Length: 62
Image (tube, rainbow, N blue to C red; front, side, top):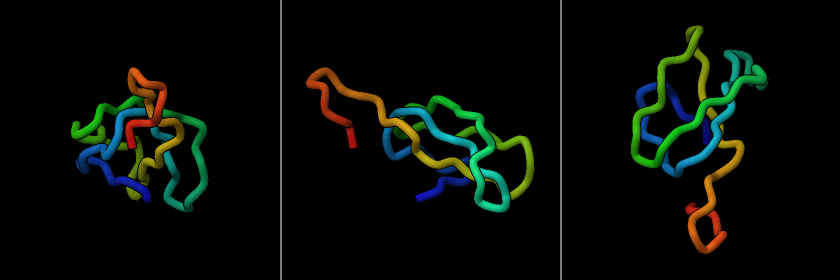
């Protein structure tokens, strides 16, 4: 599931910036659960979860 800028992050973790044609741009942002995703550098770009943050028990928080 890709997230648009301004949507809330469902889980904390590293999110890849996905280009307008669907390819990975090679850039990542760190997002916190329930915080708004930042604006993208170019129109029609989205974010995709790469690596969810682990909680204290070592399990993914998703």
